[in-house]
Image 1 (spheres, rainbow, N blue to C red):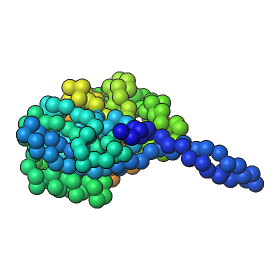
Image 2 (cartoon, one colour; image 1 turned 60 degrees about the horizontal axis):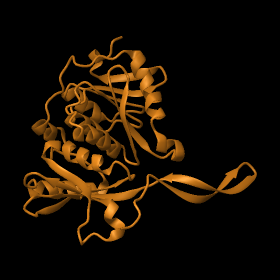
Image 3 (cartoon, rainbow, N blue to C red; image 1 turned 90 degrees about the vertical axis):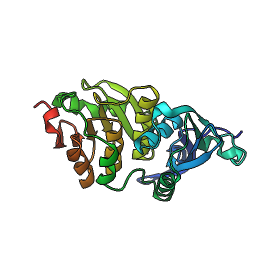
Image 4 (cartoon, helix red, strand yellow; image 1 turned 180 degrees about the vertical axis):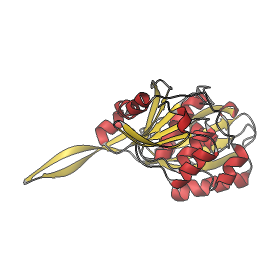
Length: 279
């Protein structure tokens, strides 16, 4: 079997600084494809997604993706491992994850939809609020209350947990916090949605879902797919360093979520669910 890819890759670069030129080594964030396959006890097998990701926490990424898309809950997962099927060449073994289910594989039409959207453009999620209404309920109110001081401290605590970003400067991050601001888990990836899948997958495999007493912090903007994944995990509060999209705000307001954007220094915008932020 080939060597397992790591989260960083080293390359040679020529650095220009003013009138000085020098050759040196530089660390980059690794970007590799990950194929997620499902298998059942009767031998059936399906590929459900192909996504570009940073290697690391691949099993959590698979579990988080399957839960967020409403395909497979953590309780239906019997085992997760790297693929050893004969059709997978040795150099691709660590880029293919097989999720063995306790029951049958979900209906094929749904899998084809997810596979095509994920492999073609990297968008992981349903295309409209209508699809979310069919399978998600509003998050409970009153379980989480935050102070502005806790909010202001989240970006620095998230940044302190980004070990690979410190080497490369090229990764997104998602962190899971308590209402008191304690960082429970942080995951990094070249894709914002992958980072969220990794951290919610960590929670799913640890039996922590739903995350109705937690806060999700992301290093970039808050998009629809991030809100969808947070909602599927039961997260009531999502905070982002940058701006939310209009559809992200729609999701937050529709399902009773608190959405905080432009969280930098001692300022932020609360777009929805301001009752959870104690002024």
